[in-house]
Image (cartoon, rainbow, N blue to C red):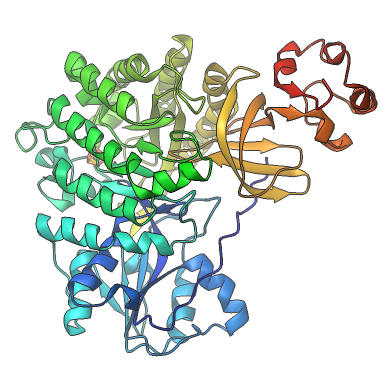
Length: 583
Ligand code: SF4
């Protein structure tokens, strides 16, 4: 399926703006901020500016895609004067491919800076080093502290934050979400619960930046709920509890003492119930319900990310309790992404990796047990995702055989995996920039074969396990069109790309009956499917319908479509999805 890019809403310029946050997006192991997500970093900068004395209406926000759209009209110049500072957020070290936005490039940063009149231009975020150049200052410190320094004294301060500053900046910066082009829907606010990794005491995984943040710091459930209430008051409808290295270790008293801490189900319960009541009782969701949206399907989405499989496997009973709390409090379709990286025991040892294949299999089994039941949007409540890396020191062509063996075992055991992420490992160079290691030709080729096999066989296998023909995915938001084909996704973590080959309105929510599965996307038709409103080509979207049967169906509709069952001998499950105005 060819992925078109969804077009963002154009910027709403405000001539009162004195500080502009230009969001070039964030994609880090423990934070996502590519549309439809807005990162905690973007909100912290806004909160810092306000805490330093800037009135809210003086703080503006634009995505890089909105700047690209206006660039054509304004000849590259931002169409207002009087800016005191422009802050570019650049946190995609290796940009992936996204449906709703494209991260800022170094060339674009240079173009933007040369077109600005603002006395101060700052670039911040994990890719700031690689995207910086003349005419700008770099800030490698906390974005909220930086924002506070800029509005208070015009100075760029690169330092860490206290937990109090962290909470205050996020709360005070919640308003900026309302300027995001995806607000109110399908916007998702990424929520931070902690920083750092419990494995920092052993140095952590060889490739990871998280242990470098030092001892783990947690935000308390009340502080997170306070931020959520503020976000909800600005119309936010959807969140992901994704800003942490491991949700299972949340507030565990073992963190700092043990590398594999025992989960604290009560702390996780406090966190999740606080988030749920703040969001679902808030203005954003209430307004969405008034517009006819369904909580947990089209709005009010609460999803998760990142959990440590060795923690889950080491404490199965306590983990099951914690997982049941997460599955019960989040909305369906949520994911816990498990970082395995490699199943090869030698690679694990050499890179001080987190878990082995056996622990991952046990964690997958427990998450399936706690979250495998289907929920409101047609997906299981909570499923595991699995992360693999290529390019780790010690990896040989045989290493990928261990990975395939694990995937085969999960599939044979009919355990559901929501998604498999395969990336190249990145390591910091002497200038602190993250780059791939050059692989031997054999390892590169074996990695390519592994990736292809996973996409062709295993992705399809796990998707078929989860979505049998006729299964209904609810709340698919139509995002883009390519000819007669419309593409959409459900709101939430790792959404599947859904294609329907009939007319639909970009921006509308539809329920889709699945007809076909490819490696990372599904095809289907909107349900209920109104035969009397369908064009001849719309009818071709129904399974088993060629041009001859479509013509027969099209002719029979004015008579009330007396015998549709005759037209679907191989797909009788289609019938309950059909409606005809005349019968
Ligand atoms: S477990 Fe490894 S990859 Fe995950 S956050 Fe910790 S150090 Fe990084």
